[in-house]
Image 1 (cartoon, rainbow, N blue to C red):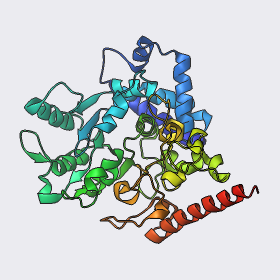
Image 2: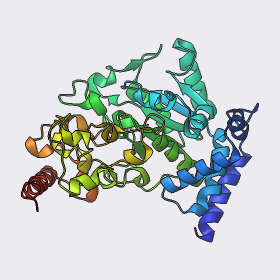
Image 3: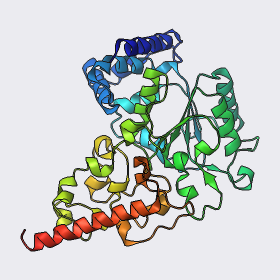
Image 4: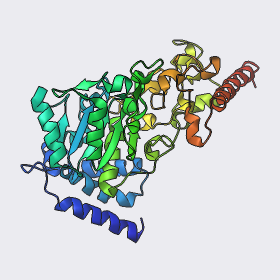
Length: 383
């Protein structure tokens, strides 16, 4: 960390510290102590977040300070065309992590699923928050945006606003915008072929810079980590071609997979439940889309960090990639075994490596299938 960069971060934290806390009755530090989180555990957490964000260990105290000041920035969370799975990723945890405790503590000014108010009272709360914190709040949007029939497929609240209109208003007054989950980032299942409501990603609503945090759902660590980065630097992190933070989505599932050694050895599950499945062999031949999917699932995991799909025995379905419902299905067959059928033409994950085109992705799949076949033949010959 350069001297200039450290000064910038310290100036950013000083600005946050001057802002009044939105919950004057307590603080983040007091809340964590009340929940039984020791200072040592908190600093270990800050160190893990620092490493996850691909920052040097010197940033750990600054990350901790940013977390302590996270109650200075209000958050408005909109639910558009979605299933609420992204919200559940944050709230449905048996043993709340520091990530979820901090997120639950910060000033969530509006979240229609979690708030007690409903109807006109909820609508009033939203517009009051947008007015009171104009230019200051962080906007998090869960769900795609229907454009069909002038957006009327998603009509919200007593004033019958469309989701498109509401998103445009909220984006215009925000300090930063995060598209949470694949539906908001890329359209999700609502945008799958034939997409009767013409659902589009949040980025189609505005020309503002939007950071995508895809996944169906994304892990809570990717959501909270993105928030911590913004708190620390006051701007967006380095993004890939699909506007995803590279610290979370910079590597393929295949690169970080615990079964990668099995792939390299040519040891593949041929069918679910076979001996290879019991031995933890590679799941590519039963449909794993890990080679085409960029995410850190094997590091962050799910269910309080206990497991993730590949560890549990099912291949990755590519849920953090654009149009995955169309380009990755059927989920139990390799990509090389079938043709793409997508209303959008099927841009695959390799586009993030500046390889835009359907043919290249399919060729990659064929190459992997060939590798699997060759290794199996060698194994049968005892080579």
